[in-house]
Image (cartoon, chains in turn green, orange):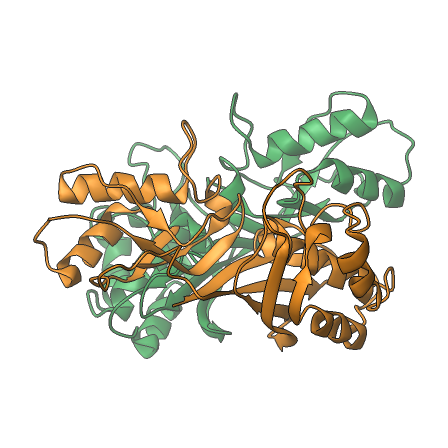
Length: 240
Length: 240
């Protein structure tokens, strides 16, 4: 399944007791329609407030409902904040997480005279002076390639390998917003929001693009402060 | 004060115990900043999910904080879903509700191939065949003038005078949406959402524009069914 959701309506992707989550809502709708408990496997978690246009999830079921009927029934049982866009039989051996080759995330900034309640959940609103887009583009280019992204994740005690490979990284105006599009073979926790935070600091002349390479070396997690808000982040596509 | 809010974050304007409301949040912020309990008077209530760009509210206080400082402090204390746009001393005898001469509401329709989670809270999403905008414009014109709007409100036992005067009523494309703008000297409960519902039925050829005059005469509250969703409705401006 390819799933779109407005992350502001949920406490993240992963099931948690007592609060609405994307996985929880999907499993509830599936149980209602299929008449059996099924486990939803996603391409990865998204945090509270993070959106998805192209989250990929898989279920295993012996249910004989044809996929074109099933998608209509499921969308009818899901809250409007979650929509299944495509539903098809997976190839043998496919796993949404382990088969993924790369992911495309988009982070949206928007320069505003004053913050709008209507943008609050969907972009990172930037008040004050205009962002230096040229410097930000230089910063985005520094992410390309294989680097130690320790400074771009919050978990200092993690035993995870902090080296990740970024295949694409660019800034593009999208309507009134400025989009940071990044494609990588994998991402650490909070990594994209920390990359966005670095670009925000660069755009405000509070950081020089060259400092990014220093961060790869010195792994200084304090330099970026808190990550950019979840509201601006969208999981666009998972590539297989 | 002129106040903008995203109504999807609140259980309507009016204070209710145990749930977030616009009035409740304003009074909480005011108490925090002014150090005293103050009552917020609005130009009128808005229902759960209804938005405002130009709600007008008034408070009485002896607090000597200058208005330009007060607006910054209050916006700092308010949730991002509520923003005060202007704050100034009211003229003597002013009351946001009783001094109002007219109100401008906007209702947004948007034709979509499939419903988007990201539009769900902000427009009335219309799936399927395109709306007949010409017929809808004819319908909107039928609202102009003084009419008995009993068929456009849900409270059948109300003793309120059901006659209201509509000064402006038109349809305009606004970006990808279709806006129904209506200005009237006063509105019954749910009246704009029921007018929008009539236009929706007309746009889908489920009702003829001429039926609107019949509704003024026969006061048939069942004809329109449930009102159009709250999500599409915006209080734009209150005129004094």
